[in-house]
Length: 139
Ligand SMILES: Nc1ncnc2c1ncn2[C@@H]1O[C@H](COP(=O)(O)OP(=O)(O)OP(=O)(O)O)[C@@H](O)[C@H]1O
Ligand SMILES: [Mg+2]
Image 1 (cartoon, protein in one colour):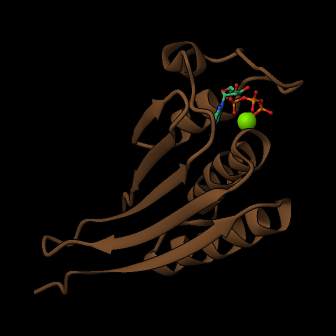
Image 2 (cartoon, helix red, strand yellow; image 1 turned 30 degrees about the horizontal axis):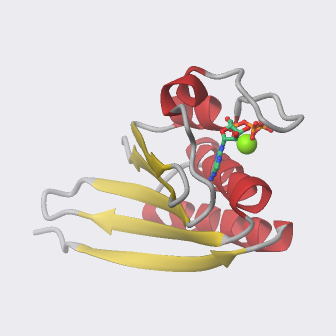
């Protein structure tokens, strides 16, 4: 019988040092759940890219990182990046990649999506943005 449960990390994000801390602790938590270094690094990159976007476009926000084990033995990491910034007018365009309103590559979101199993963006102009990413542990 497997034990179900979850651990949660919550970060207030306002500058690159907050992003670095979330990235580091999120990677540690992933490895603690059983992810190998390569996959834990993918989770770290996603935390980093979503955190960078919060700093660059919203000014501040939060990142929640959840490590979850289900009763059937399945495990996954969930990353939720949330802000009350300007929102994204054209989410489809951002997901397609190569679109930027800064001097970036416009690959933070589209690249992150490729590193995880589930990826969704809920954004409302003038209200804010919530990005959720899930990566399952495959053994
Ligand atoms: N949290 C956010 N709030 C508002 N706009 C956002 C947010 N995240 C992303 N965007 C918008 O989506 C665009 C694409 O984001 P993405 O992270 O893919 O690329 P980028 O940040 O422009 O460049 P980089 O490749 O360096 O990440 C941004 O330029 C910005 O216009
Ligand atoms: Mg970016």
